[in-house]
Length: 598
Image (cartoon, rainbow, N blue to C red; front, side):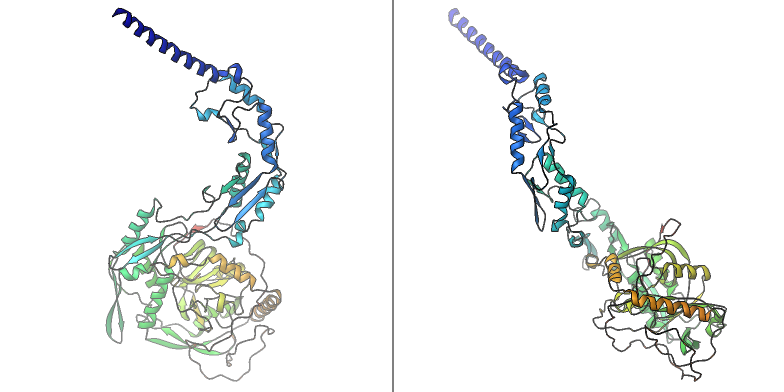
C-alpha cells in the first residue's frame, strides 16, 4: 500500500518537473534562444507583412520582392483606381534599419499571445515619388471635384395624421477631400496593402444630419415644437372680416434642414404668404402719376393710410411669432397715412425699372447714381414684387439665409418683407436679361460699389418704386417658394451652382456697352433737375447708345405694369462681361436672421 502511494507521488513530481521544463523552454525561446537568435520570432510582422522565422537579410529580400509587382487598387463608390508601384518608382528604403528591430526583439521577453509586441512598424519603410502618386490620384474620375456629389442632409417628412415629423436620409454623395485620400493611399503604401476601400476607410464626406445622427432626436423635437403654433390674423376687405390661419400644416411647409443639420424657417415661403395676403386684401389704393427716368409717366397705386397691409411689418410679425413659438390672435399691421406724398415723392426715392434692369437713386430731384441690377428670377417664379414701398431697415455685414443659400453681404436694405437691396459679389455682371432665367430669389442684386453708394445716401423710410419687368418666360416653374417643408429640402440646388451659371453666361462685349451707357447716363443727369416732359415709355435696346432727349409729345396715361407680359424668348447666351471683383468688406460679418429673395 505504501509502495503504490510513493509511486503516485513520484509520478506527480515528474509531471510537475516536465511542465516546469516546458515553461522554461518556452520562456527561453521567447527570450532569445540560440536557435532563434538570428531570426524573427514566429508571428512577427513588419508593417503587416509576415517575417516570422526569417533572418534580417531574408526579411529585406522579401520586402524588395514585394515591391517588384506591387499595385494598390483603391475602390470608390463609382470607380476603381489602380496605382502601380513602377508608376510611382516605389522601392524598399535602404536606410530602414531592420537589424535594429531584430536586436531589440532579442532583448525583450515576449509572451506567445502578445501579438501587439510582435507587430513591428517602421516609418518610411518604402520610398516612392510623392508627386507621381499625387498625379496618379488626380487622374481618377472619382476624385474629379466637378463630378463629386455633395452629401445631402436628411429631410423633414410631415405626417399630417400624426401631426409630427420624421427624417428621411438624403443622397449620401461622393464628396471626398483629396488630401485625405492621398494620406490614406500613403498609409496603404507604407503597409504594403494591395487594396484600399474608400468607404471602409471613411474617406467620403458625411451629411451633417442623417436618420442615425445623435442629434436626430433633438431635431425632430424642435421641428414638432413648431407644429404647436396656431396664429390667426383678421383681414378686412369690402367691409367684411376674414380670418387667415397659420396652422401646423402650413407651418410644416415652412420648415427645412439647413447645411448644418439644424431646423430653420423658410422666410421665402413666409414672404410668399405675405404677398398672397396683400394681393387678396389690398383693394383701396390712391393713384399717383409718376415720371420715370426715361421721361414717361406711369400711374402708381399708393397705399391708403390705415387700409393697406404693411407687408414688411406683417412679415416681421410672422417671423417673430415663429422664432418665439408664440400662438394666438394677431393684429394685421397697416400702412400709415399716405397723404402728404408729393409727386415723385418730393424727389427723394429709389426707382427700380425691372424691364431695363436699372436702378436710379434720386435726392432732392437730382439723379445721384444709376446702376445695372439683377432682380428676381422669372423662370423660377421669384419675380420681384412691383409697387411702392419704404426701406425699413439698414444693416451692414450680415448673412442672408434661405432654404438653399447662405450669402454674406456688406449692405442690406430691405423694403418689402424679406425683399431688399444688397451687394451680390458672387455675380460678375448685372443688367440685360439675366434676371429672366438666372435671377435672384426676389431681391435686387447690385455691384458692391453701387450698393455701398446706395447705403450711404438713403435711410429708413426712403421710398422705393418698383415697376415693369416680364412675369413669364418659356419653361417657367410655378413653385413660388424655395422649399416645401415635407421633403423638398433634399432637392435644393446649391446657390454656388447658380453663381457659376452666372459667370458662364456673361461676355465682354455686352459689359463694355452697359458700363459706358451707365456712366454716361449718370453724368447726363447729375446736377440736373428731374425732366418735366413726359413721353411714351419705351424699352431701350440692350446695345443702344446713351439715351437722347425725349420727344415733347405727352403719352397717354398708362396703368401700372400688367401682371403678365407676352412670352419672350430665352435670354441670349451673351451678357455683360464680368465687372471687377469688389473689395471685401472691412468689418466682420454678423449672422442675421434668414431673409427671402436674395
